[in-house]
Image (cartoon, rainbow, N blue to C red; front, side):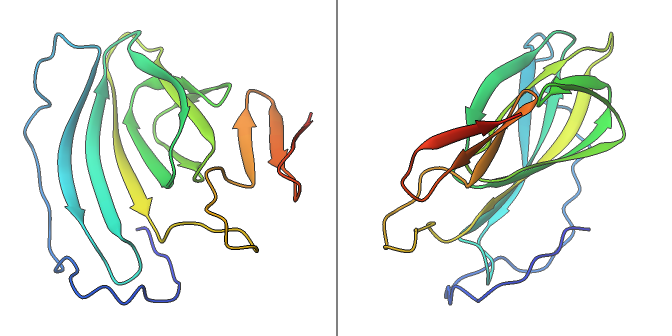
Length: 156
């Protein structure tokens, strides 16, 4: 169960409560990376709550990138490499907005996981400037911090 709190965004439309069941397979099993939408809609706290299922064939994956929203991943099957680590299901991964993350399937069978994207209000710094990166980002075994003067410092 995922829970979060915050000030309501006051959005007039939001998704209704429901049960979303999807037993179908992702399309085209010949592709190394496949996704299938499970749910998408606004909430009282998020511009958009998005969930999709993903399947990585052995060796499949994608290069590190950063998203402007928080990402939660529930790994149900398989072994993957992500954030400089080898992770075997069952596992839960969290990527704050702006953090670099990629994933690659290492097991001989496909890796299957659920991705939940939480698109909140547009982040701003204390001077009202739009932020495009999070305060920190995992890069291999080091941590990168964005300081007040917008310079990047790395810590082992």
